[in-house]
Length: 73
Image 1 (cartoon, rainbow, N blue to C red):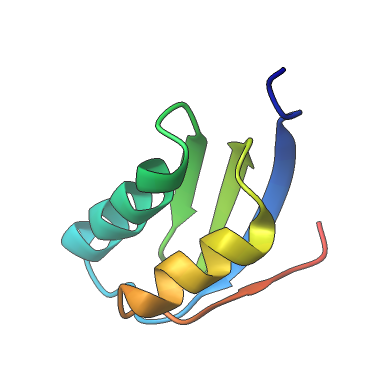
Image 2 (cartoon, rainbow, N blue to C red; image 1 turned 60 degrees about the horizontal axis):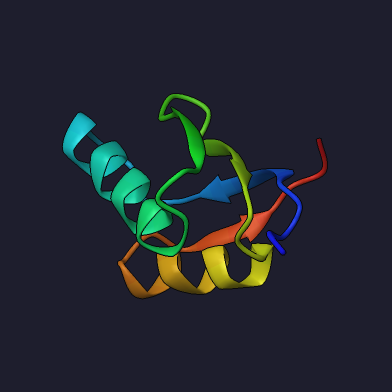
């Protein structure tokens, strides 16, 4: 049975260009290829609708060089 999709909002540091934003989206989609990812570089956050666990996303982004933390919606 598939896990439920959830909406997450993450603060992500270090996104200085479109390449960084694409790298962040790739890191998320490695965990959930069907994730909906909206990156807002100007405000340093990423909105994600995913089946992946939030802690897993935070770990993956931080390991990719973009320190992340959950935000309240």
